[in-house]
Length: 212
Image 1 (cartoon, helix red, strand yellow):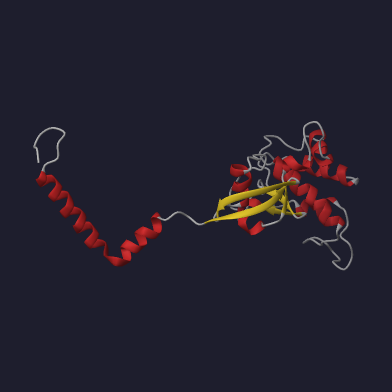
Image 2: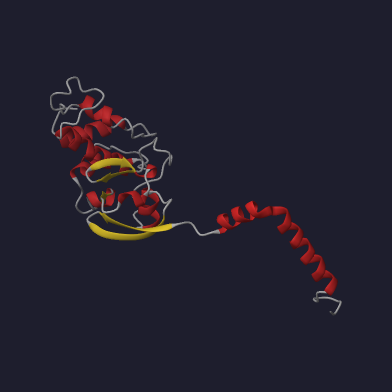
């Protein structure tokens, strides 16, 4: 072959082939199989959800969390990603009437489930009573945790009305009382780094129609 600028000589081709053969030989059958597995596309699956009352069908990497499915695929960015470890509650959404940390569950685990995010509770022109109470009592400061706080607060009141006991319920044989102590205990998984807890408690008490 021609020697010179921009050309590849026969000697260069032989060197390259020899080096490639040497690398392949050093990997061995097991390592080759592992390399092939790592380069394979991740498994995907279809999942159908009902998000804020709207049927939603997604085709997802099976490792996608519900939080990322909502934010990255459904484009509902009201639900926030905080710690991404289930410790701050910023990603709280309501699934089939129960609040969950959406960062701790995979989307494909929720086939057919009804998911309510902060966008599904109300709109700027028609606020949910809890959203309106948060505004009235200044239940937020930076606002980053607010969507999770409001979703959790709405579900907490329903939990108490349903008689589901908490850690501070004195008599679990009776319906849980609608008290600020019950609310504060149940909201303990939602962290507000600004410290608006008292205002949040006042907002919840207003919606529950009790004294804070």
